[in-house]
Image (cartoon, rainbow, N blue to C red; front, top):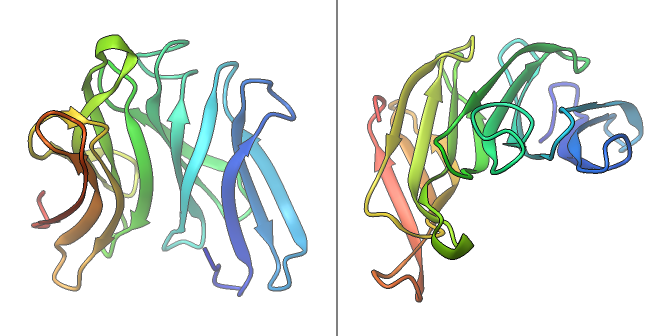
Length: 195
């Protein structure tokens, strides 16, 4: 994402400091020169997938964690970090269910909170995740205002992108499969401001 100073903020994963991987947040100037970078995570696997600029010129970051939450060392939970303008953690949260949940996108919302899109895994028969589209709305302090799933549980069903619309509702897109879990299809979902 482009930052208010016309630089860029990038999220990903590094295994430099932890073999299993940590979030890696990188801030550059407008020409791509490194200004700062930092890593976040525990002793297990972490992977950063999405970042957005916040109203206070900090950053909201989401990804997967095996180090925190209810699935330590086994399957991933959704890991959210709010950091200031130089990457110092202000708060963090872990969200999701008892299985390895998917997260793909976080966006700042007009009320100062955040919307997260992903997939809530219902079960993992034979190691294959069956999930539902999943949205989480957080307030500015990371408290969940609502968490909602949509539609039937199907193979690897998830929301990849979510955006707030001018009226406060949300539009999200992702993918799903047919009822037997074989044929992939696009998925578009529009929900009210309360989910």
